[in-house]
Picture 1 (tube, rainbow, N blue to C red):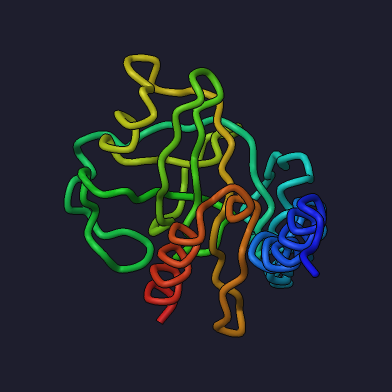
Picture 2 (cartoon, rainbow, N blue to C red):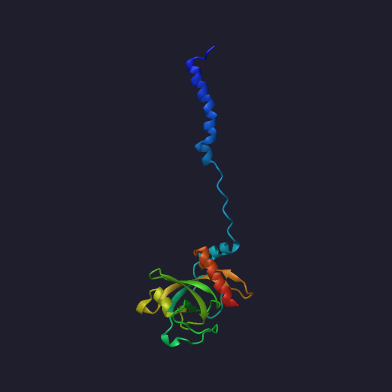
Length: 198
């Protein structure tokens, strides 16, 4: 006995429906798929973010600060007469290097200096002591002064945010500047600071 015409169409539709569902899952099921778990934030990075959330300090005196907190003050730059002079870390001053002097940051610290007048910044390594004028937090090379676009002003307000700070026990701590730095910048700063601290 032959099946009625409409029954053949229904049988065909029913036989294809499960195959179609198996090939293309419903959009709602796709949307409910669990998101991949994000990697946990390392404690050092959490500390860097905490330091970055604090207002910059205005350092007084010459006490060495290993905290990694940002400093606020004014920047000046070395005169050309300092070329090739011995610095506090024993190296010779190079006016074309990204180096700086600080009264309070440990030698070897890698920090980001930002000109508050124009937003330009440069990464430096602290290799010398100074400046010895009240209100100034860092001296930089002529190259860095050019990067910061200090120009003929000579002295401008800045924030100095340490990225990597050597500790008394030989370890390296991430500072406030690490919160906004890329992983590559943080790794490079850590390596340079470790090498300088040896």
